[in-house]
Image (cartoon, rainbow, N blue to C red; front, side, top):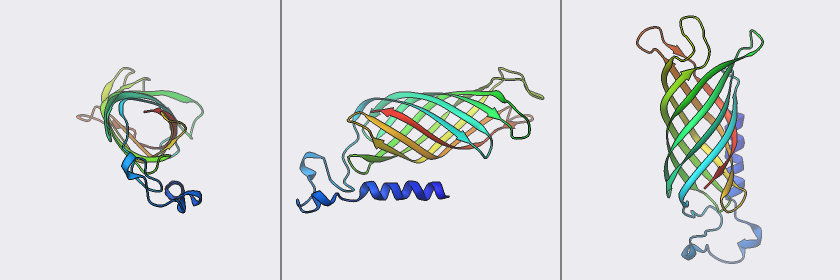
Amino acid sequence: MRAVIAVLALIAFLCAPSPALAGEGADTEADGKAEGCGNPKPSKGLFASIRAGFSAWRPSLEFQAAAGWSFGAVGLGVVFEDSPWMSFSRPGIDAGALHFGLLLQYRRQLTPKAGLRFELMAGGSALLFTTYGYHAGTVGMWLGARVMGLDVRLGKRFALTIDVVDLSLPIFHPDTMPLIYPAWRWSIGLAFY
């Protein structure tokens, strides 16, 4: 909960109008570059991102790469993710699962420097290790979502991405004895828009 409050405070800080610009008059809506919490339009074209994350609730790591095409605020793409699983009860890291699928992204630019991002992911998941009742190579389905991710611009085309609500749900054999490994992760990465 504290992480969500911290992200909201950062958004409020980034949306605050600059004191130096406060006396210059109204927003410059005509050229699409609004000050304060104006809404510059997200760019169209290729987007790509890489990120790393960690879940303490169901211990796992996340290493992800995504690419696609942005149609403005909405983007469609593909995503690949390696997710090693860990346990606090025994040492070591299992190979976990490899997730792959489609990505639907919505971006809302708040200021020229910051924006919010919402993402839905769906596809397949391949188990990378053998565990009781399941063999390495078992394929299942995978669902993922990121809610209210923060993009902080580092330049014209690059952004730092911060996600405190990064959900992942691989499901193996839902018809018999399902193996489900949900994870609520925090992640950070770099994006190109």
